[in-house]
Image 1 (cartoon, rainbow over the protein chains, first blue to last red):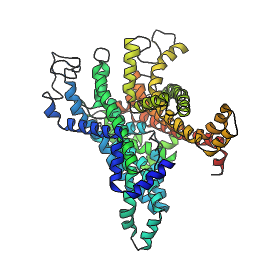
Image 2 (tube, chains in turn green, blue):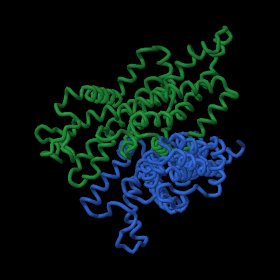
Image 3 (cartoon, chains in turn orange, brown):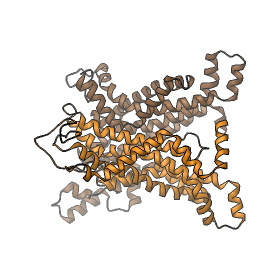
Image 4 (cartoon, chains in turn brown, cyan):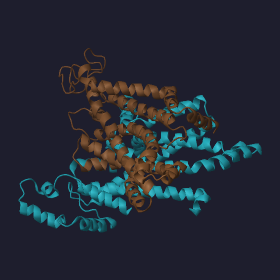
Length: 297
Length: 301
């Protein structure tokens, strides 16, 4: 309690730069941000890093173990370069983790704010609809949605977006209702601000930070879920690389060439962990008042 | 529940491809397709189709599988039991790991044990479950030959309980570890929170024996949020089990869902999704009931 009060006082005293300082003090978060940056740059610069493409198969060198000359991470059952596939596949896996979370955040934020501020009938309609979507376990719903559409990266992105909207919508609604009860909102209303203007200038910035924190943590989770969809063959189709699909490829040759399974799995684990740490760091930096938030089940 | 059924029904309207074309083949005449569509009721408006589907579904009639021509219920029910076996053994395992470790970590706060447990749970929480399953297969089945790779019974085996348990170990561990990690963290946070409340300090000052203090004043207050999270994990477990079943060829709903999606066997997909969704809703209701029983304060609400 004492620590909380003192940070709250400190944040009032020195507004902006305090936030960056708090983030910089969290070593795990800074390291995670650095790791993610490296991964993103490496994936974007994939053609510059590897001379071989992700589909170029070398029949003479199948199941090469890591550190074989020319193939830093070895090759898979078709003699394709694991490093190249990892980097090219990272583009897909990162996109599947990040894009749907951003889309769902935007939609969830809008719906949640509308529900939290308007209350009444609109609130009822929006929240009951989200409750229904909420009733499905997240993985089942994503699988069922992806399964009902034609497999591919768009399907993956759309289904994960839909799955996430209720989670973010609920959070945004709670946050909006909390903010709406604040005295400064009443003051703004008394000063003659229109509801839209109040929502934009006073509510939105305060709802944005918890949503941003939650979204960062969700990105890590969604990389795991998205790769799960690819693992089942519901995401990108062969020969396109993707970390989940690579794990699935390796499953057949698990005994002869375990590295084909191990390497993409480690990539998923590392990136997902990094997003988690980053989310924790952001939470401490953006909002010292909130305690732990429970994770999406 | 009504909402769940609507979503499941609409989900299937998303499916690409025409059922009539799928059944009759590309050479079928337009008239034949029209006739079939009429016979299946597919030319009627959506709400009517939904009503017909729902009245059948309530009676346990989900139609006939497109792929195998068997009644869907006959396909789904035995699989459902197998999934329940896997899900509940995983839940049990997750609780058996999560509760003691979480309580112990909270009581020995900031020790090596606490920090170690938190690091491991963080790692497990981010691990893709299907990948973890493959690692376990690699280590315990392919390299050490201690346990079978996949399936539920040996083909040559007698199909007894021992055989089932041997096949159950790896999938159950795979499914349980992720939820176990989340439960551990939740139990730890909840117990720590309960320990810091004033009434615990008073009880301690009164000289209450440690054991009694823990049971009556700490755990009782720490339980409700923990039970809620455990119940939520049931949904996560079912989702995890779907993937684990595919990895281990466990003959449950997950592998059925997987093969039916690949085969575009819509009635089976509908029945499976609806069944799992209903279980999840049911689990949440049970959790609420348990919480009301534990905490009389909630009864007024």
